[in-house]
Image 1 (cartoon, rainbow over the protein chains, first blue to last red):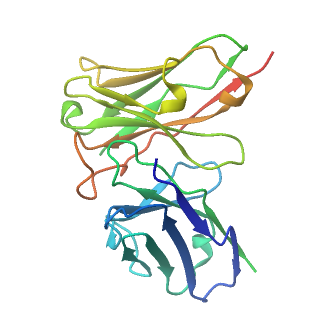
Image 2 (spheres, rainbow over the protein chains, first blue to last red; image 1 turned 135 degrees about the vertical axis):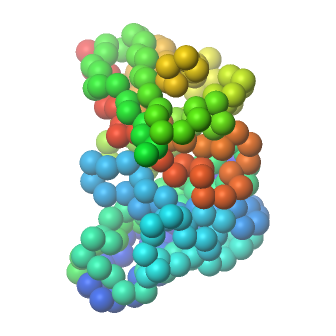
Length: 108
Length: 123
């Protein structure tokens, strides 16, 4: 099983600041990594797939990078609606696409 | 527009079974698969399994093998997830999500999710 480790567990920032979230895989997943945003009481929302491709309708302030075992989700300038929990998901080991444990992005 | 609509909340006793439905609309059901993901209260996302709506092939998480069964009814574009021998740690919100039939090769994988179904296991 591929294990994904996200860091930090909690990130406290203010609107307008830049957010950098990390996801590390226990073995190479090439570029087969996705990122999701989840708000309380809602289903996850796909943000990024294949490490760096924005999903339909996702604002340009969200970007993804990385390959192999180390990946980053960057939010260039935080909007109030961006404060949520973010999950990474590996899509290398079909079809068992496991998730990281999440990073909570909270308002400072 | 693509929609996945799940059945309502359930309360079950330990040892019982639950069957959650996920009705799809707005796309060709048999051209995709359905994956089930659950989330225990205050916890992260756990991949449970996958079913092809094209041919019914399934793959389940190792820890759920023998207790979970995923099926589809192509006549109603509905997917089902049945979990048996329920325990208290099965208490969670259960989600269905649309996925591709094979490897996720683009943005049409986990792009649409159901609203979630809360299953509570309590004596």
